[in-house]
Image (cartoon, rainbow, N blue to C red; front, side, top):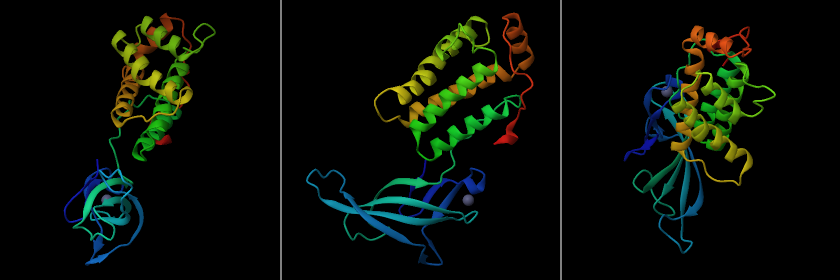
Length: 240
Ligand SMILES: [Zn+2]
């Protein structure tokens, strides 16, 4: 998570530095890179008192990549960096990319990576829906989309019954991925918190590992259960 320091610079993981931690500076050779501002409510103020919201161009000290920071100031006309209140958001920031087994079909890898991009763009609702979509595609690719198992809920239960995923994982697939995604798609708008989307991220990755880490054993289980899996699909990370 990006953090602003007293010097007005931001420490964050940089996509241009392969996700490494770096400092993004607001000035180069003593000259600020650029700023524009709007007004926003002052922190802890309920009487409509406003303060400056600054948008600052920043530069990675490592690779030179540009980025934008949205910063709330203590007061209207406040000085930078002395009067910084807090950092509201910073973009782009690299977050943790989960490693996936090499056998995962390319289209599923692409869906998973796009969900991770959504998290990086603070689009948690979009990410939650995408992780649910990853599960949908994994179960379908492994022969769980049938007349009898016509929805994801039944497919997750069937995979646990076949022994492809554990009972504990079944519960996580339902509670932390499927239901979260369903809420986004079918219920009233509500915020999806960072910790909830990170949990969905984590368990979606674990389910991909369940299906593709020890693929030979899983194929044996799928055959025993009479599942038709799409083994001819191209696989790997290169599609992303
Ligand atoms: Zn960088």
